[in-house]
Amino acid sequence: METRLQGVGVSQGVAIGEVRHMGTAAVEPPDARIEPEQTARELGRAGQAAAAVAADLTARGTLAGGEAQAVLAAQALMAQDPELMSDVERRITAGSTAERAVYDAFAAYRALLADAGEYLAGRVADLDDVRNRVVARLLGVPIPGVPDSDDPFVLIARDLAPADTALLDPSLVLGFVTEEGGPTSHSAILARALGVPAVVALPRALEISEGTVVAVDGSTGEVVVNPSAAERAALARAAADRRAALDTVTGPGATADGHKVPLLANIGGPADVAAALRAGAEGIGLFRTEFLFLEGEGSGSAPSEEAQTAAYRQVLEAFPESRVVVRVLDAGADKPLPFLSPADEPNPALGVRGLRALLAHPAVLETQLRALGRAAEGLPVYLEVMAPMVADREDARAFADACRAAGLAAKAGAMVEVPAAALRARALLQEVEFLSLGTNDLAQYTFAADRQVGAVSRLQDPWQPALLDLVALAAEAAKAEGRSCGVCGEAAADPLLACVLTGLGVTSLSMGAAAIPYVRATLAKHTLAHCERAAAAARAADTAATAREAARAVLAGG
Image (tube, rainbow, N blue to C red):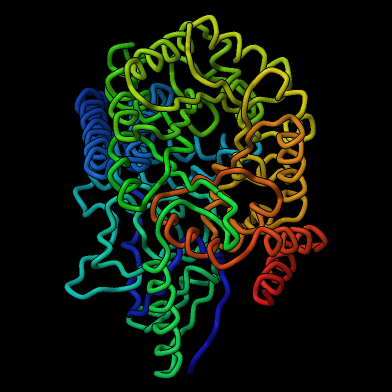
């Protein structure tokens, strides 16, 4: 019997296939005790297992490259976190086996995250994955993961850890559905990067039986269980039509009446450059530099100026005569770095993260800015550098001063991720030369809704009218000051929302490379006036769902 379920679509496309469930989690080890003379052996087993898991995660990240590399590098740090491992050693010394000590230490840390207000609850999937991998290795059982199959399938899981999402084979995993997660979770971001249709936050997804045929529409968020032959054909036609439309529109991003909207790519490092070029990106709108700090030498200290210069130059060389916007290190909260991040913050999301961490460690910022300047020397590239977590004019001035002090010949900008920055955008623009809206964090802070927690995913929906109001405020301020105001958050990857953002006055859109052709084709169908009317209709709505439908109706009416 055909049944329709509604989740949150996070990656374009349609997948039709049989369901396979994610491998089960590692079992809870028995609460066995050891004799004192066994302590040294168990300490060695725990250390070796943690090191092996960290090495495996790092290797997976290197193989995957790009955004996945930064995500997995951060997860590898979890596997050997000094505080966690110290707790493991304490428990072993008190008589626990290595596997039980690991299991209990991670459980205690999990509880601490909840007590901290659950900002980091979205990283629980990452934490649980590390625990399961270490415990499985100690018990000598298979590590949980993507099921083996000779035939393509649709993967269903409670949530997907980055280590599994990063290395999904798109020729085998047709699409995936998760019960938890949100539109800006790691699994959603990586799905878009892979071009795999995906739906997250689907209630009771795990109740869909193995072997059941489902149709997953990553555009609408709809999952059809046991679709009829007619329904399968209709979905396949719709997907084919969308793909065909992509091939008819080439060149720079623009509306139907010629209003230019540069379409840029979000990247995590040099490994993402090829995909951005294939998609026709007009430049880079967000170069996340965390990857270099989270891997290799960067795990315990900042990478050298020479290492940074070499990595940045690889990206800059790939985009001659193009705009490349680099975000300086965004550490803290869900991306802690031992040499920057305070270890005892009660709520890291509201603490020393982003620019705040860099201003507290000016030598790290100065080195990065010098490296960027050296990387751009002699290249015909339009380098722009922006700071994350800018809250007010004082922050903006401090960053602009740091750029000048480092002798950086590049435009300095500010990310608008905090509501205060959107409300006072015009004041920020007295200090910096451009704004870039990070809609993921802006939604998170506007609605007090963790971007990784599926239970509050409706508040993370970028169609929320209050979020659109803040985007409009920032764009209007930039226009008044004769400055640019782009969007580099995941909202830009939604083709329909891209039209609304254009109508709100946003001057450029930056997204994962896989989304660029979809956004280009959709913008080309509508005039700027249509986009402005759609934006007004969306802002007049009271909910994300009605905002989306109001904009769709305006654009469908031409």
